[in-house]
Amino acid sequence: MQPTITPTEATLGATITNVDLANMDESTWQVVENAFHKFGSLVFPKQYLEEDAQVIFAKRFGDLELLTPDDKMKAVSISNQKDDGSVYKSEDFRYKTLRGNEGWHTDSSYMPLAAKASILSAQVVPAAGGETEVADMRAAYDALDESMKDHISDLKAYHSLYQSQAKIGYDIETGAGYGYHTKGAPLRPLVKIHPVTGRKSLFVGRHAYEIPGVGQKQGQELLDELVTFACQPPRIYTHHWQPGDVLMWDNRCVLHRARPYDFSEIRILRHTRVAGDPRTELVETGRDTRAKDFKPSSSNRPDSKSVQLNSTSF
Image 1 (tube, helix red, strand yellow):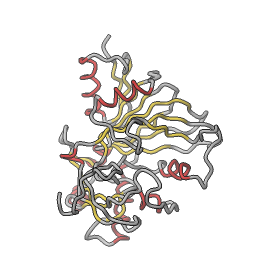
Image 2 (tube, rainbow, N blue to C red; image 1 turned 180 degrees about the vertical axis):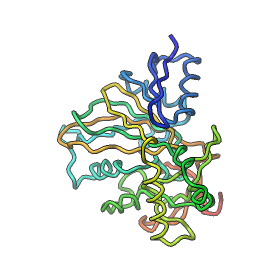
Image 3 (cartoon, one colour; image 1 turned 135 degrees about the horizontal axis):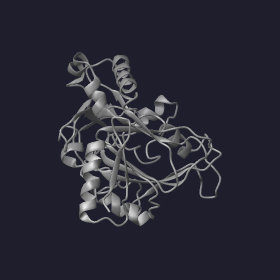
Image 4 (tube, rainbow, N blue to C red; image 1 turned 90 degrees about the vertical axis):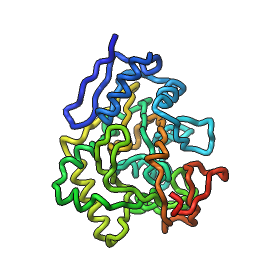
């Protein structure tokens, strides 16, 4: 049976049925990969993937980005539940991370090597809220007027998880978790050309915080204006989770965010992240004023084996 692809009513996204992600032949894989590049975001209902199967599926798209110091941990849990069954409180680090995820962002834009794709599978979902939304930055760029396209064509912005968390009132220390590093703030173009499709898209989001050559206030206002403009219908798809669902998106042209929910209810999603291609996703970094040090590196990994670089080496 051939997979059935049903596009959403938004400018991005499609649901694919009649497919078993844990057991795909090569022809089915080609359908999925082509749909990923065409639609930017895909939903696979009722997959109920085991962790190993999700990891194998993710690896079809490329090398995995490891999000913990443990090299054996290929997938991580995005959850408000502690190991003892209770839920995180407002003073907890994980709570602050989850609240930050409610802002529009792209994964790992704050790392030297930005992510290619992200995959979530639903384990436990709340009765209401907790949706994941994706926004089409290809269609957003296309919708800009020519004067704005000209204005931003050569602009770049620094990206930082420290800075994005600070914007919502959280001052996070270096080394507190993934993304709070000393590798510097990556400098990324506001307009990205997709390495496969060749389409232009906006590359912005909550982690972008400073545009060199533009005043800090004016730069932040421009970044906020672009996100507000971009993340509007018909460029948004909202996924209402059901257990077993798998949702994935292309971080190179899609923003995403979590929607609020009652934190007394449990929400558990399993996350795998596909690393970007260094030829297109690795950029130079500059000193991040909120980090304790600046040690530029070509690697996202927090180990001494990564290659130390000058910020001018790229």
